[in-house]
Image (tube, rainbow over all chains, first blue to last red; front, side):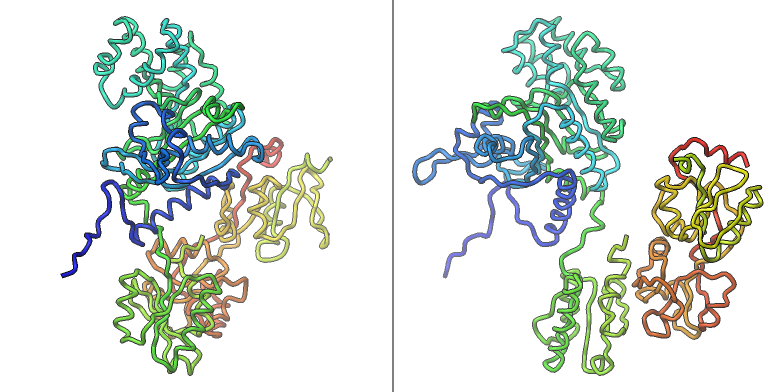
Length: 433
Length: 202
């Protein structure tokens, strides 16, 4: 007997069926349309990069999660781990032909050798927006507005954008007499606040700082209150960037309640230098759904020229899970809107004419491939969740009519054949504005 | 630019609301002489101009602060998706937006509208109404002469304005359900503008 291969896929990867894909496309299109509305263009970079391009850019813990292998020619290759580092490489390679400042969005899969868990996969999509080639805080403001618009347009009521300033944290650490070379290490430990308790963080810091410095530092970092109160509390440090950022966000029309100044936010990655962001959804315990910030020196590894940039990555799969949990998918439609039945040989030509008319009017429609019993054709329509079925037999043809069946109610109605498109376009279920 | 300092009030140029709107303004004590061909009528006793516009343009003009005040029917106002402040319902020009069906139609109750064709010039209000009632129907948007569509087999029901019900009757239509009770309203733009007080003081 022939031995069959089990139709399985690697751990942490997924197959998507059309119904699931409809939802994914819905979310992607929404996100894309926000990016486009701010004038971002898109680019593509290869899934494969030279390992040296990616390794050592993310900090030690993340580098371990980068997939690497030798290609057939013995070259060290890495799979795209995120889109920001390949983007830096891209800018270094193409900056002479790009308009500057350069704004781009990118939506593509990335791979991480992470332990799979809820909302965490080994292959998943990232959606990034970046602005490169300007140091203006307006760029941070625009990115914040983009993040706000994305979650708003997806239908989320409750979400906050937490932000902090890497510069401010450094200024705090410097005033605590912590040398610059240790600051990165300390920031990485501080980033664990929120995930582990204060005592745990204090323990991890014990080998790096004096007990008193740890207490002072943790008091500052965990300060509570409104954005203004926290800024007031930090008056001896460099809070200008934070204040200017808030003023700009205000002018961009980002509602104040969306923005939460959180000093414990330090983004574990090595390349952020200014404002950092993370967005969280209320009512869904899923972690950050969007994260990013200002990076100043990243491109310098690929080019003599330095480019300052700011950008965020959206956690696409987490957003999907959250939308599912909050039931925000009631507006998604599958691709096919109308099934035109295959009544018999004699009426096929007329049915195909109807099909052509519907498609020319911008209504997605398909024909059934066999002249099967009507019941079987309706079953197909049911399984594919096609909302309308058009039936046109000899009797209807003679009167210039067609029968339209609304699958949800089962109600059938005969109307003039030339009114099918206005009927379907006017149907309220079609979502007239 | 002397004109821009004057308060502007928009009223319907021609139609149901035109005459009653002007009477209302006169009742406030405004004195003006109408000239059929002028689109702007200056008041004699106040720094106020009366603008004669198409009624379905008025909400948009008020919303964008092109004019300071406007008088329209609620049916026109709510069909537009604009943000304006309604100051006062004026009590004149009452009418109803109704769904009507041909006499003897199979459609006897609201639920029977499910899946049927309804012709209207008020698609927004109708969609909203149907959504609220949980009914799906095919909305056929037409600019005017809605009453004739059932006879032409373009629609199974209509959704239109009626004052006395006479036009409906003439076309052998009977009202099934009221979507909106409407009357003339006075509205202002939501942007603050100085000099409005001139009008409010009246």
